[in-house]
Each structure stands twice: as C-alpha cells, then as structure tokens.
Image: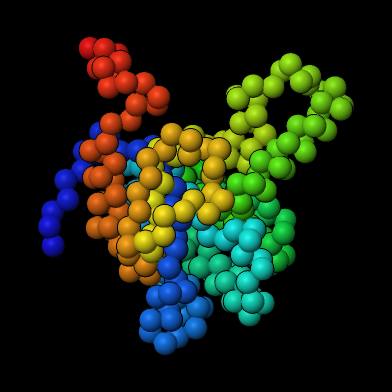
Length: 249
C-alpha cells in the first residue's frame, strides 16, 4: 500500500461526507440493503478515527435524509434500530477519544427511542474537545433553508428583527448548522457525482471529492487520499491566483 503524505498543519477544519453505496454493495453480495448498512458502520468508525488522528476538528456524516423516509418501511425500521444500537455501542469510544457528538436535521421526526438515545449520547459527550462528530439525521438542505425562512418570517412578524437586518450572517444564524464552520471539503463515495440535497448553502466554496469506492469498502487510506487531494488544490474563493499570491506575500 502506498504511503499517503498529509500536511497536518493544513488539513481542513471541517469535512462533510455523503456515505453512499450501502445498497449496491449489499446487492453485489446477494444480500438485502440492511446488510450493507450494517457493514457501513466499520467505514464510519475508520473515517472518524482517521479524521481525529490528523487533527480535523469537525466532521459531518450524512446519515439519513428527509427523502429517506420514503424508503420501504422495513429498511427504515432497520436503519433506526441500527442507529440506536450503534450510538449506544460507540459512546465509550467517543469518550475515550475526546470526541463530542452533535446532530443536525429535523430530529423530532425521529422515533422516540432513537431521539432519546441520540440526546443521551450528545449530553454524555458534550464536554469532549478533540473533535465534533455531527450526524445529519432526517436532514436535507431544502428542509433546512425552508425551516430557517419560516422562523425568520415569524421573527419579522413578531418585530424581533426587521427585513433590513437580513444579511448572510443573520441568515446563517437561523440554520441548524449555525454552531459549526462551513465545510472546506465534501467527500462522496460510490462514484455518484451529486450533492443530493446536502449542505447546499454551506458548501458554496467547498472542494468536492468523489470516489468510486462503495461506502462499506471505504477505509482510513481512502479518507487520507481525499485529504491529500484537497491539499493539492488552490482555494481562490472567487479571486485570481495572482490576488491570492499578493495576499500571502
């Protein structure tokens, strides 16, 4: 296996991951989709460990979208049971590695037992400082933006703010991602080249990295390859290379 060189002084502060390919991985092996989801847990563990080891401070995993509620009921029930089991099992590891758990999305739409277990884990790990692990659950970017607009409109009606106050910073404060910095890198597995309604506002200037690996096969080395690729890119934020060079001089 080739050695992957990473400059730990210039890793992204926040990495977001679309964990795609569980179903296709299971189908290739003649199994049902839940088999793929269960085997995807190892990829989650390795990705979190890899991120923490190189000093990344925030990682967001797209675990369940609002659109996923339209999947077959058996798959949804299995996913929720797996989520509860995995969260309970991994609390000890999160504590040992000083990682705090967070969640974004329409969390109240989760089954009550799932919501309770999630809140328990979030509370238990809240004082950990090494890295923030953010699960996107019952989340979609369109849902988040529409929800923010509804709350914003209500605050205008209640005269808490005026329309003249609205700017990018204020709007950011109404998003479920408000406590976290925007991702600098978005990784998607399985060879698909879509964003799938994930962090659309927040990834305006993120670097995008796509890999053919199906999620259950994704390992630390694959994560490191994504980081190494990111470090080769020039992030211009709408400026020219020459402008960036002058700023650095």
